[in-house]
Image (cartoon, rainbow, N blue to C red):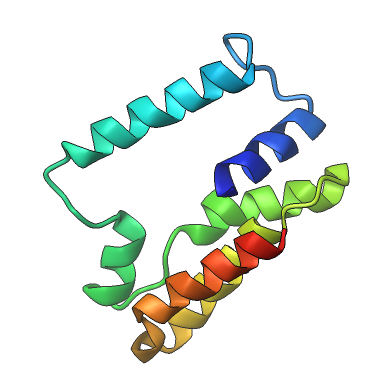
Length: 113
């Protein structure tokens, strides 16, 4: 769902992809990326490490925050991405909020979209 919103915003901004982007191509690309990440030596993302280990602000604004800004500029809704950014910002302020229930909250948000 997050990736679908990012792609929708990119298309609204007329971002050109190197290859045609049909549903099968996108699913295959995402599956390849997931398989690559499963083989990674690190089991946690850099954002997780910034929050849980380093107790510092993440790069969320430069990554998904930019998608939210572009979604507004191009009129392409990205409510799940915006919710993810808000959750991470809350965690940056108050680390103790980190819990599996935050993922459940994001999943519920995705079901509502």
